Image (cartoon, rainbow, N blue to C red; front, top):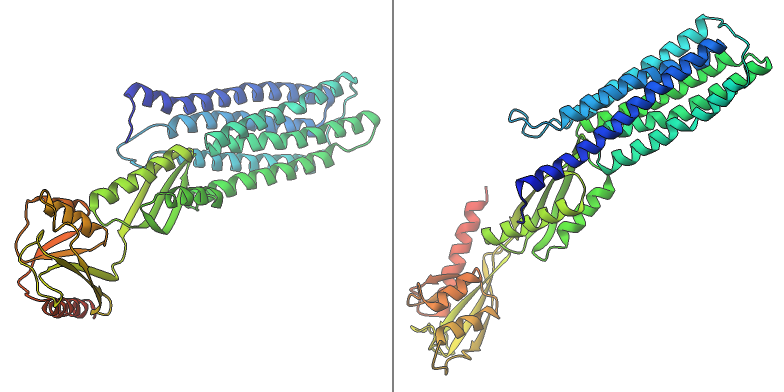
Length: 417
């Protein structure tokens, strides 16, 4: 696995946090400006809708503060919380949602319980209100864009809320026009604003609760992860892929069947897939791939032969023939036998190694010999290919078939309840 210096790793970790904090600070400053502007204009005009929208923006100030605190806390590491404090961001989003509900309730309450006091005002007020309408939309769009890029649910929640503010600000604008022209639209506008505010809060609450309850990540992300894993040539089958969100980070778990049963090779294969997932899928905090070896349904034995009658040769490299005997593991019985000539028998040097390489082309699982080839070249070649080498006392292929069938039947009896 490729690593980096501690300085580079720390810089990569800090970059998203600093960017999120900067955007959250922009949000706080703009919200303070909107509060002062809206409440000031509500005093001048006596508009209940404008005052309600000002209260909404005032709650946005608290939401921006909560957003900053949530980002700071969620980025901290603790040995007591090995999976991180990322869900603090989701908790902050829930707090934001309930503050939004509170805002909607206050707006409706005031609209139904007061008559309001309309004060004559000049057209310049309408100009100012018209100018501030696009401000929350631009801020919200920017927050959502950055939030999606760095998978920050609290920033996305804050951005969505600001985008809804455009609708409420537009309603206020038309209510003020009505008031300017003598039409009593102020209270109706305030109630409509409350409905939009409540709907926004419900969306924030629903998304945050999904993450806190460990709902799965979206299908598109899971399909991308599945595609990355299946692209590895060692992967035969994907049993399952699951993922859950925690704050803006993703935890991935997968179970796969590999074509390789050797522990080290299988481990390297899963590490390759894990590295690719981290590189391609953004904001993956942890990825864990469990692997299972391919289920063995057949076994092939390779045996050196002295003759075509099936007599086992005492010599590995000098054997004129090799028998390849196939067994059905599930049925516990012999299936077929093939005999091939030893193509390397006439070689003068490295004969045993050349014979071992010849055997590899026939893909045996186990090689049986009458004499040990332990710590010799042929055994090294076979073991490097994950082929087991055993000694046998059997003198004929018929005897080997009988012994292996008995072994398979005994193993099958042990597995059955």
